[in-house]
Amino acid sequence: MLSSRIVLKRGGKGEAEKPFWISYADLMTALMVLFLVTMSVTLLAVTKQVSEAERQKAERDREIAELLHRVQVAAKNAGISVDMDRNVIDFGDKAHFDKNSSGLKPEQQKLLRAFVPQVLAIARDPLGQKWLKQIVVEGFSSPEGDYLYNLNLSLQRSQRVLCVLLAKPPVGESAMSNDELEQVRDLFLVGGYSFNAAKASYEDSRRVELRLEFLGIGEHRPSTNGPPRGNFGTCALGAA
Image (cartoon, rainbow, N blue to C red):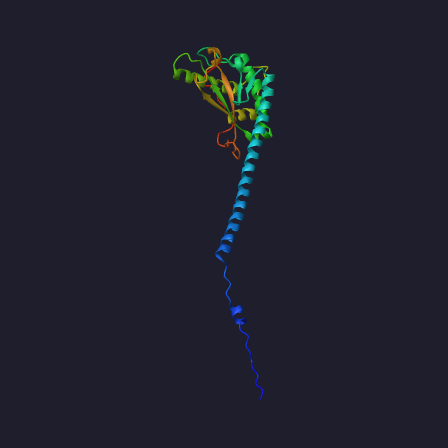
């Protein structure tokens, strides 16, 4: 009688049930790739932010330089100089004061009333509205006398400029419009500096300057809705 043998082949079950494990090296490789991708994305975002900030700064510097150039052209026509490094309008001998005096001569007053409206027009144009923050009237005195006296005298000289601009001009001169007068009040600030920035001579030290201050990136002019309009009053210093 023939007998048959059944041979069972083993090994299939073991192959099917063999577990799949990720090696430690493969896991570290995957984490490293993830880290590198994350760092690349982060560096790209930071680089983009830095590039945008540099672009905005370059644009601000360029547009402010254009504004100062316009002021320089207007000043040159009036015989006034502009210090582009300090952002200062220097009237030179056209705005010198007598010793111990805060008064301005008639021709000096006329120059101020003729020149300042040109600066106001520049402040109203798109670049002016975008960057010009305020205009500080800085008064100075010579080193003669004591500090507090000269500090007060410097402040009075600054205040005199505002008094001249806001007062009714003499007959024959064109008066500024109400909008321009309001613009003077909104933009101009008064400051006194005694003899902290004295010039070579006492006469040159007794002067006023207009310093232009500009807004930073993303900064806006302070609101001027609070103060009442009109009613400028009279100068507390009396007649010039």
